[in-house]
Structure formats: structure tokens, C-alpha cells
Amino acid sequence: MKTAALAIVLAAGSAALAQPTYTSLGAVQVSSMSGDGTVIVGGGSGGYVRWTEVDGLVSIGGGGSGGQACVSRDGTAIGGTASNGMGSFTEMALWQGGATWMPLGFLGGISGSSLSSGYGISDTGSHVVGLSWVTSNQAEAVYWSQVSGLTSLGTTVATRSSRANCVNGDGTIIAGWQDSSTGFRQGAVWNNGVQQLLVDGANNGLGEVSNINSAGDVMCGSGGGSSGGGWVLTPGGVTRVGTIPGFDQVSVVTDVSDDGTIAVGFSSFLTSRVGFVWTQSGGLERIETYLMAQGVPLPVGANLNTPTAISDDGSVIAGFVLFGPGGGWRVELGASCQPDLTTGAVAGQPGYGVPNGTLNNDDFFYYLAEFAAGNVAVCDLTTGAVAGQPGYGVPNGALTNDDFFYYLAIFAAGC
Image 1: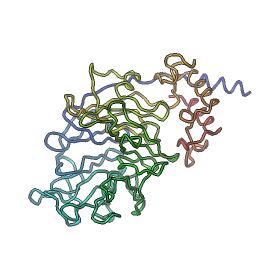
Image 2 (image 1 turned 90 degrees about the vertical axis):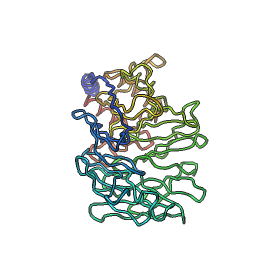
Image 3 (image 1 turned 60 degrees about the vertical axis):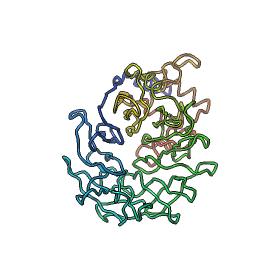
Image 4 (image 1 turned 30 degrees about the vertical axis):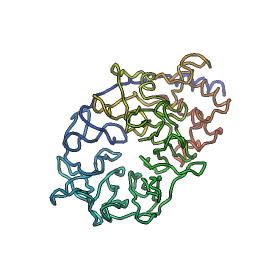
């Protein structure tokens, strides 16, 4: 009976996936993307812009001193910075449609023309986060909510600034940075308003947090090359992603998938940078190399040096070209298929361990071999094997039978 059941599973898991695409977005420095990758926002030549496949690139007003355009996970709300209607002053704001923005408040300080700035937004737009000036040279992390208005998260180092860069789905977990007494911007998380500074497994301070998932248990951020580079934090711990050779001064992980298995960012030296993709199974590689291996039809000589956003499932990546022609860009890897793991099942042969957009028996036998070998990076897929329970589909740093049965289930479900 077991043999018959396995045969049914193997027969079920065969499917071809949608083909990858590359889209040039025009004049936009992409800063944020909706959870499904269908709405993209960023800075244009005269303020913020919004892109969708139907409407293309549309100006939405806003912009100013500090902050960035940020779109909610459901794609309906946009936060950032905009004029507050009082002379040249700008403050954290929420898009109201068209080119209209609603100012969200400030704490009382002024730095140049900036009163406050928005950097991140929650899943539905109920919370916007950023900073507000308390003096001309000190700012504090703040959040705005539809219920309580603008609230300061304060600073834990006297006379030093803090900033909120991102917020989880319901607004309970906010992340960004806290200036230390030396000026190091250490990653910080505020859980229901209480600050915690982030460190890696060696107790070294992590750089500022760039992004967070909806649950608030997966984050990513920056780091110097000498400390191991940028990082990804999951329930299983902190992983330093490293740097790209020749661009090893600093690396910044700008965004991460909802489950923490794939992330994007850039690695730089002085003013030069290259984009990268990091995966839990394959580590760090230049983004052009990764995308071409996935069959993405990149333009000849493409230099995608600043990836800034990735969809929740990791199937859509967007960014822009810094210091060069090209503007914004969007890549769709095709339908996401988690159990697609390899091109062939023979170790040492070309394509082994490289997904190819087709789910077949080779993927199953590849997983079986890597599971038997104890390959946690590839085979750790879940905390529990019961669908709908906490931890289902979330890696936990340990390899157990639950991971095998989880893979069996998603393989049988097909793509």
C-alpha cells in the first residue's frame, strides 16, 4: 500500500510553470512593492510614482525631504512624505488618491524643511512608521495609527536618533535603527513599543533593519563586510549573507520573502555596487547570474545593481539602476513552485540543485537524497506538519520527519 501511495504522489507532481518575464518600468527608483508584486511605488523626477501593469507609471504627488514611498501589502495604501500645506515644510503622510496626501503629524522639531518622514506601512495601511524631529539634529522613531494618531517610540541613547523603517501586518512590531553613542546605526525592534537591539549569534550588533514580514518573525538588514555583511533573521536565528567579491565594504539586504528563504539586496565598495539574490539553499550570487539561471530574458548587458523589493512568495523582484541608464525594472520568475528544487536528480551533473520551472519526479528524489544526507539548508521547510497550525511552512533550523511529510504534501499538491 505504501508503494502504491508513493506512486500516486509521484504521478501527481508533474507540472510546467509560467515563463519568467522582465519589464522595464521607466523613470522610477523603486522603493516598495505590494505583497503579490502587482503594485510598485518609488521616487520619480517630480515626486512619487505608482506602477501597475494596467496603468503603467503614474505620478501620485508627495515626496520631499527624507522618507520614501511605501505601499501596503494589499496594495491599497501608500505612505511616505509630503508637503503639509504650510510653506515648504514636509511631514509623514498617507496617500489619499490622485496627487492628494494627508499629513500625519510631527513631534515639534524642525530640520531644514522636514518635520517628519514616512518610511514604512502596515498590511492594510492602518499604520505608517518613520521618524520625527525633536530638535534640528535629533529625531525619534514614530508610528501613526488610525486609532491613536502619531506616537513617539523614543530613543534609548541620550541625544542620539532612532528611526522606524518598517512595520509588521497589524502594527504591533516595528523595526528600524537606534543610533549608538559611537554613531553606529544598530538594528532595533519595538514590540508593542518596547525596544530591543538586535545582535547576531556572536553577539555582534546587526545593522539597521530594512524590512519585515507580515507576522513580524522574519526580517532583513545591512552589515559591514568585516562583520559578515547583511543579514536575514528567521525563527531559526540570524544568517549573515556575506558580500560579493570586489564589492565587500558593505552589503544591504533590502527585502526578504515572507518565509525567509529568499532575499535581495546589493553589495558595495565606495560608490560602486552590484545587486544580489540570497537563497537559504544556494547562498549569495549576483542577481543577473541568478535570474539568467531561472530563464529570465534579461536585456543584453543588464546591470540590475539595486534590487529593493521582493514579493511575499519570492516570485517577483523589483528595483532600479543606480548610476546608470535603465530606470526601474521588474522581474517575474513565473508561478512560484516551492517543491521545484532541481533540474536533474544525479549529483554532480549540471542542473543538480537548480530549479528549472518544471515539477517532476527528479525533484522528489533530489529532496529524498538531500534529506537522507541531513541537508538542513535545503530540506528544513516547516516547524510542524499540520496545515493551518502555527509554524506550518516556516523553517525552524531543525530537520525532522515533519519536513519530509511537508514536502510530500506540497509535491503531491503540484504547482
